[in-house]
Image (cartoon, rainbow over all chains, first blue to last red; front, side, top):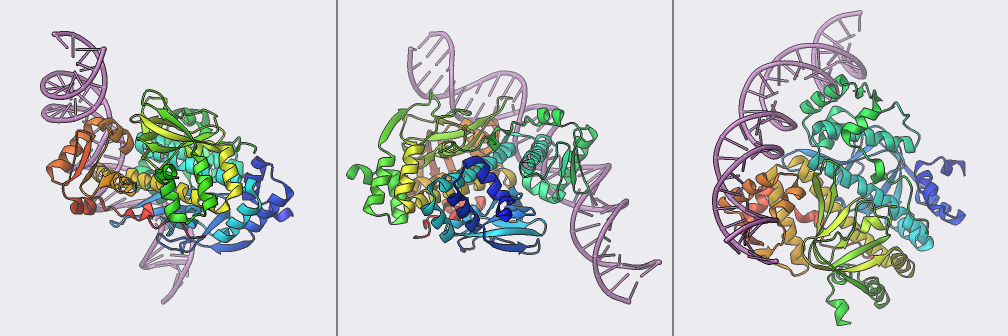
Length: 244
Length: 244
DNA sequence: CGGCCATTTGACACCTGTCAATGTCTGTGG
DNA sequence: CCACAGACATTGACAGGTGTCAAATGGCCG
């Protein structure tokens, strides 16, 4: 089962929940249907009724909402091992859209598959709920940033969070990580204009804290950046769910 | 079973999921332990490890995060029938605090009770997940407001959302509702200063759209207010979860 | 009556958006 | 190989929304 063990979602769930062989099998079955997607076409569209969600296996995606006046707000950025459009699966219509940032690979999860997994492995249900809770905690932290942090702090906080999340799946080192986002993505994530994102990035770079350039994020002084952003990774709950 | 049927959470869940007698019993057992709380003491504290959540039976609560610089961001406002601190139950430590706005009554839900309910009634598990998804959708809509709506629109949107949510549990009419929030609460919810909240409320009142005064919200011109706020209640998903 | 909390209002500063122009790079087609 | 288009990044000037500071008002309660 090498294929499953190298799977980022299984790693994330399995490392925390001490699942049995049978439960691990259920996790594997949950991700048996793969699919490739590209930035040209949305993976999920706001208002669509298909009861399907995904687990991101490789690549990056964004979940976002578009308003009638055309402005876009990105609600979350997904990296490998993350749920994608999980909320849509139970709501009668998806409340948001999902678009790949780069070519990506996902596993398709239907509501039936999920329900079967839940019925057959209640502890797996709790583990999945835990992962969903963690995602939710990230959205809330994001919301706090929009409400109570200025542009510089928001940017610093986001770049640090992505670093921690990527490190969990082995895609980031202590000094930085590869990042396919454009300044446009950052603007729509942080509730800023592209112009101001550019100003903010320049400022952070000239202050010697972090450099965002050519698809790569480099922490020039991670310690100072964390203090500046008041970054406390507790909400990422790296200790896992209660062992039930 | 009159007591259970008049319970807002049971109403919310039961109306949508067509649960069996046995499942309804499980919902009832989930809420059998009651507790009274007051604004003086937080119901949940950021960082606490108790694996317990609540269902709000009567009153109002807010969930919020406080930063080291003292600023507060309210992430959600709960009205009767809503989950309270549900995310805390699975995370190793709560990522937020919860404070009653007025004297309130809650039902205590432990992780054990939840797991028992899940094991004995898988469809109930899906219904609870649906309710949690709906809560999550509200947080995301809130986030979109902070990122991409100005102060006037945010305020209008919030007052409309509360009206719809309260109407679902019979606590609001088409013309308005009783609301115990202070301008301070509104400010910390909308990411504004109290001073600006006051300016915004005056503006909305003088424009003849909505009046917030003496603990009561009055829709002076609900139609125009909805247009102004670009309020689309789809994210509140009043059609319920898929019938499984 | 005297404190305290919530509300209200004005003056001013500044963070951030908007508008506009330029620069850089990549891929495409002639 | 060059011309060109398009996407992304960068910079400057200016306007405006919102925060901060300060003070006054009003209601509630001990």
